[in-house]
Image 1 (cartoon, rainbow, N blue to C red):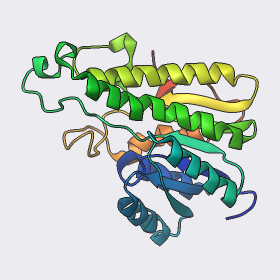
Image 2 (tube, rainbow, N blue to C red; image 1 turned 90 degrees about the vertical axis):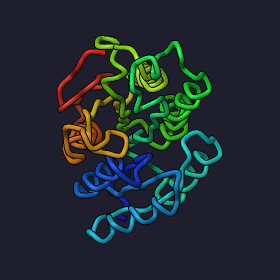
Image 3 (cartoon, rainbow, N blue to C red; image 1 turned 180 degrees about the vertical axis):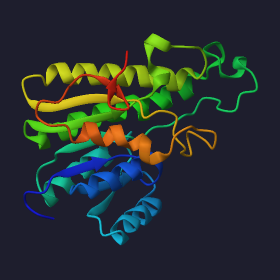
Image 4 (spheres, rainbow, N blue to C red; image 1 turned 30 degrees about the vertical axis):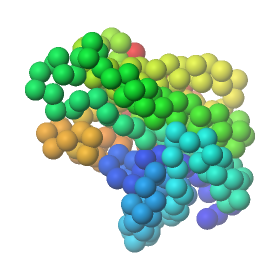
Length: 240
């Protein structure tokens, strides 16, 4: 790793969108820190990138665990002392996903413990990571929060309350951080990657993972005059 090389952390990156985001960032010359909760799968994913000649290292991370986040900070401090990109990709969909009718996935039937657990990963995890890692950006960097059209208030429907609420709240985190960091060179944006063929998206999803990661990487590599505090799909702004 060059002392001038840009460094990116991607969470939930042992597969799917996270893994492809790591690949595309590394192809652009970034030193990628691939993180995941499952260490065995994360290390295997990192070796796949290395086999392609890409610059990547692995670090275990549970985004819901403050102690695990502190260990990541210490790792980065030991490696380089700075960070350029944080991609908050780790997420869960714990609501009933194969409901035979909407009543099964209804907010009226929601298990609040599942809603709470979903928030811990999808919303509070990204917030805690921002709190911990923004100081390492030293006033200049990019934060990308991987959200979803299911969290858009403009197109909000029923069902899957844990996931929907957590992604709407993640968008609020984006807006709050972008406002508070407006006097710096740190840009914070949300992205809807679309319905992507991943384990979460399922086999009927419409777009390949490469396309889904495209806008994530675009936001992670924005120029100095790029936007902050926005919500994007296919590199275009979309309503909150």
